[in-house]
Image (cartoon, rainbow, N blue to C red; front, side):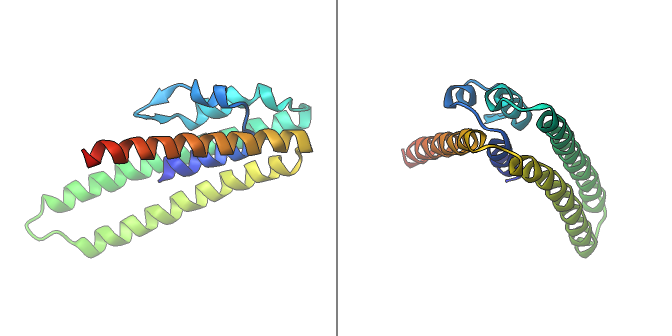
Length: 154
């Protein structure tokens, strides 16, 4: 879900042509959000101020992703430690999971705010590029969903 949101956010903030989306480097079956964003940078024709905002938003997105990964690793370690006990404290694990979710959500919202601030500076042409990229990404996801459904129904 987190990867899906990052892809949508990236596409919304920085989209480009559909071929660029389709040719983005793949990672575990999903487009790497950072690679998708980077591949679309040129198609937006950013001015200097927008370029600075872009770089800042990209850094915030990468930081949010790293924070989420680190938090997940900590939660996994806590889960393994609790499961090693004869009577694991599931309430404690639930509280830790909730705290991790809140931290990750705050980091994602910070990154999203940076992308939306950049989007607010876009011209109508740049916004059209964003719209087209989102539509292309949604079509790709629908195609993959249909393919997986057909595969699972066999």
